[in-house]
Image (cartoon, rainbow, N blue to C red; front, top):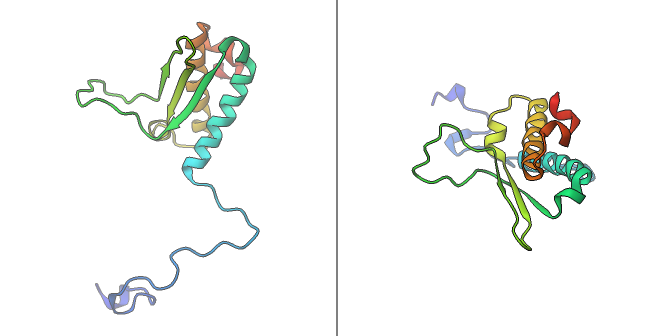
Length: 141
């Protein structure tokens, strides 16, 4: 590497010197990670929808995973955005949203908000056997 291109803090090719991250000021909150922001978005969305339909839904477990586990012979061109397993007997229904495929399809925060709402509403509608527009009025938008 040309000597003029090196940073003044990278003398003799030993790498960056000093802390890689500036320590945060005491009393200021840390910036949440992408995963934490996504989890918060899902929690907020699920809380609203679940509160409205709790009596009809019964017990539903909601979860977020990074990616779905797909078999080696997966023949589809798209990756699922969520997974819904209906409850049986005493076992609750389980709705899992897959963070990375959802984030991959969105270019902005507004698109991410809308897609998470769409996925949750469509899966809850599937559980209840109702049209998605009836589950949440924002779905039509």
